Length: 289
Length: 348
Image (tube, rainbow over all chains, first blue to last red; front, side):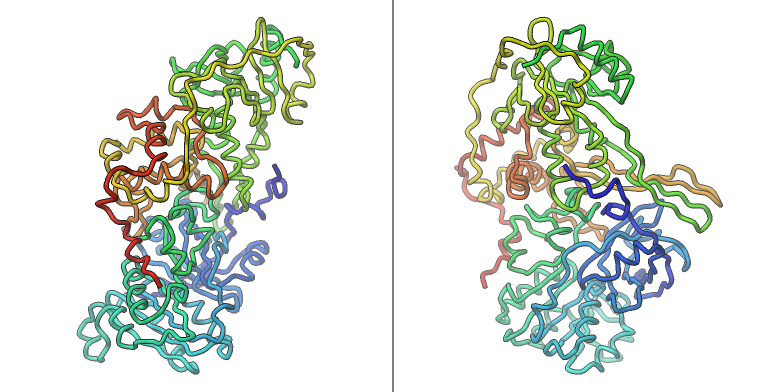
């Protein structure tokens, strides 16, 4: 049996690095953007590079840790960003932290989106609610290297207008070359309707846009029901399962394939994913639904 | 083959108990458990199998994996220290269980350092079973009652003492100080139970969506006893515990605690979605994990055949019965229940 180093925390995948909360912004109702700067040089080095779609555990020290998709890209001057909805103990504790306070961050973990395979293709990004957070680095990566990719279409959705995330980046996305943005909510409010916003499910929006499957890929993140029906709709539009990418959510406690929590059949979401191609997902014995 | 007399064993165990943490079968309020002992007197030498497996030795039911200290804005994170320990009287099935845990925590990258540190500081001294006991089926899971494969030293009882088989360098170091005598004869073979199960993997995937699991789960109490007693079940939860909390100084432990996939909320995410919402789905995962996922992922059985879960289950869910049932294609109609995946699995 070999152990890498005499118990050095630098190589311990369960050891969090210290991070300082340098910014906290409202993204939506009970959803905040957390900006974290790593404190120690080891932590800085660990997060010097990561892929869109990878995730990390963020600790509210003394309360616990939970996994979140990284919402930033490494190009953003060493600040890690996470879009976090307040849904449980750990997220509630994180929401109550003040700027300047210390958190723990462990990662980057998981596989990330295979951006190289998507080069030169038309890309459809479909984000639902907080599921938009791990897709933001995908969008950023494409916009940062715009000429490497084909046409970018972003379909952004949420149950209601207050749950749409990164709305302050709409203009940036819209004004980028060869890029379009479509937004819909399941149910709008008066203000939404007055402004002429789309109402209806993301699948309806998808049918309206009716993208061509030719040389195209889709990247979807959202609640399980959305993933399921988006897959069906894309299939009706002529997309094959191997053109569809998704990132799955699962409860997990280690992120390194040990705790057993996130298995879907013989696959672990944490180490085999969280990014999967839809034909893989459909091949799993167990459903994410 | 070497020989160690009963008297010499007692002296050796007393010395081990003084020098390191010695864990051995000991009665705790009438229940036999692998527990730390302070002298050879505490150790039970004539026993079937301890009530709980030896999993606790390398993966305690609850243990700190990170110590957090906060002084004002200064935060210090450190890992708890690990001491040397010797386990004596380990049954070969329990050693087999630790070998399976090694495959998960150490052999598969990334290495879980917390586990590996403790495991490296642990020496395993096995004691052969003279026979297979009621509910034992180790021979069907690749084991033997006198299997030396997964220990550092194996002792097998013979007249007036023990035959000593040293297996690893760690074991050789441990027994180096003993003056072992040459033994002229081989120790007796263990008495085996009835014929091995004839097992086959092939039907497992086909029977995933079978009604069988819901029927089996009708009587499951979700007490999770099977997982807690199992030498292999390793699922854990991680949570933080306050040790001390003040204005200028606080201390927390991050704990790793046993968990079980048969628990109702095991897979539930914070938003409330639960992809394994029924008891049948959860019980199915327990058995698929052992007999389909483990072989696929690690090339190993996730069961060592110790029989504890059979003995402990209050509603007689019998893992051997499940194995027998899964060794044949269903003769029940396939199936009232369709996996939702079948729907998403649209053909391209």
